[in-house]
Length: 104
Image (tube, rainbow, N blue to C red; front, side):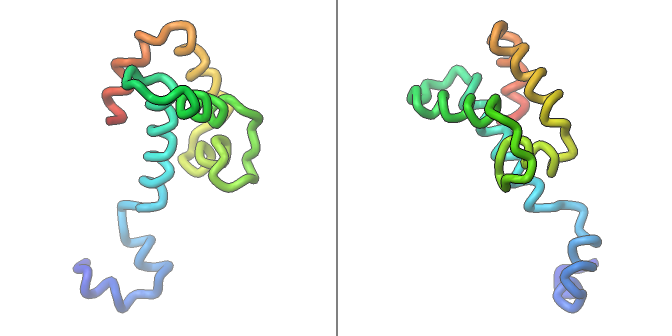
C-alpha cells in the first residue's frame, strides 16, 4: 500500500498495515544504548556507566513507563531472564564485546 493511501486509513489500520513499529525500534535503541553504556569499551563517564547499570540491574518495575522491565516487556523479552543473562557478562566482559558490535 502506498504512503498516500495510508493517510486515508484510520490510525489503527495504518499501524496494522505497517511491518515496522517505530515505537518498538525506539525501545530497542534505548535498551541497546544502556547495554553499550554499561558494558562497552568506549570511554563513558563513570556516572553514565553507573546510571546504565542501575537501570539494567535495579528493581524490576514493569508498570513504570520506560523502566528496564517495562521496556523489556514491550519488546517481548522476559526482564528477569534478560537481567540474568546480562549479569553473566559482568564477570566476563570480553564475551559481550562481540555481541555489542551487533547492537551498533
